[in-house]
Length: 337
Image (cartoon, rainbow, N blue to C red):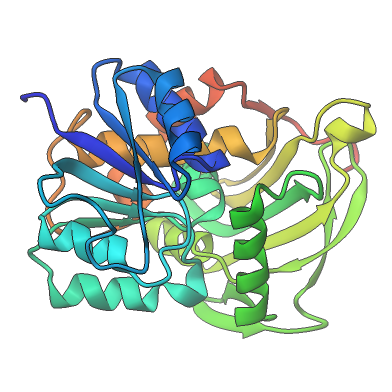
């Protein structure tokens, strides 16, 4: 295919945006990037560090995002909360692929409705999963040896010092305000759970228990519908990570427990931790970059207009390969845990 126009990264000066741009530059050195933020000086510093990138300011309160009429882009990435949906509408008006990561399960309805109303306008990748879909993709990769999956349980530990910048903290606060209930799939039925059923003991990678709870996250319906597993739950805890307890930087730890049967019908189960010693940022950026790469047709066929999710577009094995390149590892749980 020919050289695309520039990828417009809204929030390109934030943690997720900067890391995504760096990955895209590493994977595709000639891909033009536009770092968009509210502060031109910060945006220019990020762009200068990337090379083959431009900087611009944006105003998310405006339908045209404050961009010049002659601006040309190949995709729009919302690496921040697109609260007015002006980034999405801009992408639809110009027929550009759009990716978002901050909507969360409780906030995706406007995106879905916008996509349904203009179904032929552009592809929309709803990637507001945990770590932009990488955990769901890692789970599907672990599930490859199963013929039937009965139960999926994800248990994630987010270090309290690794909640991200101001945008990340605001996202967590908004999601917790939207609902205190968790969403699970139980015996094939999507069910809202509240205390005490929502409470959970979440085990860190070194076996330390942390108080957690079931959360309403897109990973639950994505994994349930991708695998037909009748029981799916995602528990989440914020606290000191195993990495920080060792005196190292805050780490990200996600336990993936699967139960089911192999092709002979023999019951099997697996338990693995997905760990990143540098925290959540590398995996989130990897999820966004994978989505951009796919939306632009830089890997795989061109994506058709409509609503998409990460597991519907991305190959789990390839995603895991990219995750491990950034330093992610898969480890067994401690003995007895």
